[in-house]
Structures are given as C-alpha cells and as structure tokens.
Length: 334
Image 1 (cartoon, helix red, strand yellow):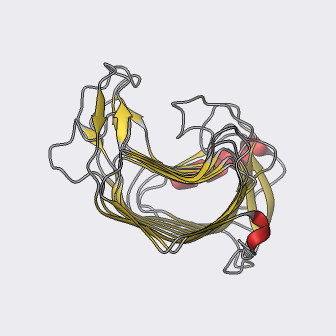
Image 2: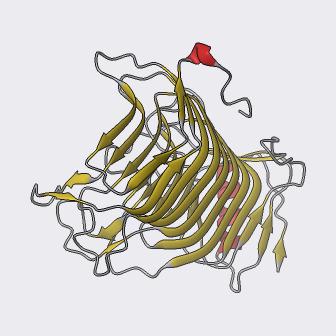
C-alpha cells in the first residue's frame, strides 16, 4: 500500500498522520510531498517500510525537495528505525537541538538504526538502506546526526550530506542494561555495513566505528571538522562476545579530511577501559586497513598529530597523504 499524506502547518497533526500510517499493517510505502514539513516529535519506523521524499533530489549532494523538521524535546530521533527491511531516500531532516550526554549517542539524531541500551534481548535489524538524505543542524554540536547502534547488520548508507552536529555518522555496539555500568552481556556489534559517498561539514567529527566488524567506508569528504574519524574497540572491546570477530574485516578508503582541532585528524585505538569494573582490555584487529586517505590541516593543541595510533596492532595504514591546509585542495565534493 502506498500512503501519500496531505501535510499541513500543524506539527501535532502531521506527526499523528505520519505515525498512524507507519503503524499500519502490513507495511508499505510512505511518500512525502515536496516542501518543508514540521512534526512535533520523532517517528518510529517499524519493519518493512519505505519512506521517500519527492523526486526533486539529485545524487552527489543535490538538495532534496522534501524536508522534515522535528520540534520535539524528547530526544527521539526524527526517524527511529526499529525493524528490518526499511528504506529511506530523497529526504532532508532537521532534528531539534539536543544534548543527550556522553552515553546518548542514539538520542537526538536525525536517523537512528537500532539502539545502544536494550531492556531485553533484541532481534537483529537487517537490510536497511538509507540514501540521498541530507541532515542539517547548523550551530548545534551536542548530538550525533546518524546513529547505527547495537543489533544491526546488512546496512547501506549512501550519498549522505550532513551539516553540523557532533558526529556525522556514529556506529557503536549495544547491550542489555539500564546503563553502561550494569551491562552483563552479551553485546551486539554492527556488521556488514557499507558507507559510501558521505559528506560531513562543520561537525565535531565526521564518523566513528566502535567495536564493529565487516565494515566498509569508501569515499567520504569530511570538511571543517575537529576530528576526521576514529576506529575504536569499544570500552569493553570483545569481552562479552562469544566468537572472536569484533575488529575484523574493516576497510576505510578514499576519505578526505580538512580538520582543525586540538588533537588529531584520525585516531585508531585498540584498548578500552570498561565502565563496569574499570578493566582495560585490548582488541586484536585483523584484516583492517585505512588507505588512500588525504588529511589536510593542523592541530590547535600543544600536542597533536594527524594520525594517532594507540595499541592497535593489526590495522594497516597504506598510501595515506598528510599535509597542511595550504598544501593542496581537499574536500572539493563538499
């Protein structure tokens, strides 16, 4: 079934209309009209739905013709994808200002796929495709823009343009627990994730990958950021995972960074300190490479380096180029 809602200037009515459509069984297609539309809070997107804006959108950063702006103060994502077989395309999203704190990376976003902390054992969310999406939160630096977290796999993010926010795309493990100090395991780690043609500007950070495996990032332009990207083990590394797969088969390639921050453009770390008991563990990376990246910029702190490596055996650096901002053009696609 195809739903083509007639949206108005009433944010409450708009959200009710859209959520009622998304709660319809069986799932179908939600086609949003062109224009600027305000909703009073975020939307929950169950399994099986396709959401798309008008076709007035171009590839490679062309602006969408349909925009959703959330005016909610709950911290709910504009779109919270909670089930498998979901597609989102040709859409602009404006989340409200949010400050969810250190462990609220899945809150206050434009799109969250999955969750960080679960009340009970989750089912895997699979086969999610997000493409030709813009996110704008200029001047707002506290919340992430797109989050992929927990029991999530087989996800494609393609042709995303992000302006502002803390991290453009945050990819993080998840677990059952009321907070990070009560996690007992197991943990769930995003995998079979592909990120291509990503553009992030005026954010604190372009993207990070924390405690993942089987991930490919190919083609990104991270411009005017304090940090380009981080590859991290997670604070519990792989201590709650049965099979030794976390930290394997990760490829980051063709990323251009124009940065000016206090510490680094790229950080690769293998150690994590658990917030459960303070134990420090080290993740052994395998079959991981960062290649053909260009890093332009200089640090603003007393001690800085374009690339910081911290106990990260098993990560290969290949054919990356480093220079100052004056050394050449970078991020011409942004």
